[in-house]
Length: 405
Image 1 (cartoon, rainbow, N blue to C red):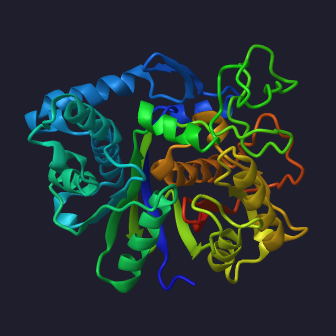
Image 2: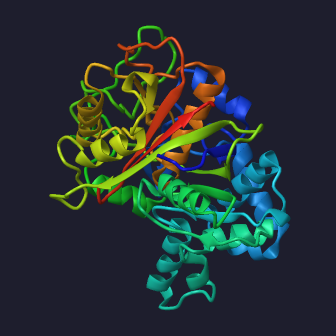
Image 3: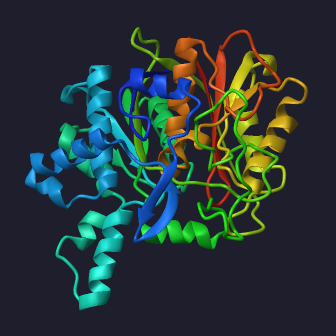
């Protein structure tokens, strides 16, 4: 049980959904996926990319300060999202807030650029080391916001953003801080990162003649002109892995106690690590999720959890093991289940915070956003408590329970 209520006073994101809450909600109300076929080094790949106006905002930030020109997009996206978050929360430099922004891959774009230059010339640029370290995300955000609190960057693969929430809650519960900016940032749409996912044989392939391509996606009967869904997250009729990557940064402002600005409240947190049998796998029934969900729920009656925003990456084992874990915990009291990977792809270290964003929007609008190609078998009349899941390589699961009040 949390000793002190933790309020979420703002949440800002930059993703394929856009950056304004009204637009993001409008996008979620649409059954159309934001995943499309893009060209990377002349090869066609599925991906969910930022809209052009956000790309312009990133380029404008590079021109705003000469020091920002050399920074990776993970840092630039996180700066833009952080500026928006603290403005909406009403924080100032006098608040001495902490910062914990992580990333699964870090400065992937710059690292690949500098490594290519090194292979070709045997030399590397002066700023290679300082601009490709993971720690420069929170450090540059602190510089940009002129904050005076602690700065932390970390990588715990795909559960990075929710681990930032865990860490901030610990600081806030201990009394060592009263406010914390938390989240994750990821710019993984690079040739080498995409090649790594393909090497794992988990990535959706746009080439229908490729033997590794997932089965053709079927259309929802209510849709006529919407493209088929390349990422078939939580679809147990698929016979191949269908993960797709997206790019995003998402951050939230956390504060101690009740707050009239609160978008919602964190009422439970849980975490666990699986006993791995393989470098990338989790157990058949996702014991890590069973433990993390049980810890987050504690004394919350199961029937009062109305929905779960799952990790559900669109892989065969990832989807099925998480579902089995949910069945183990909830039995015949299954909440409504959803994921956003079908719409925006998997954003690695930022994904958990985007799950939290979806949960808060559903609580605010009292509307459940389901998966277009799946009928919800357990409808609930209202949304009171929503559980958010994330897990990454290493079986490091995190579950966070949020409520409107």
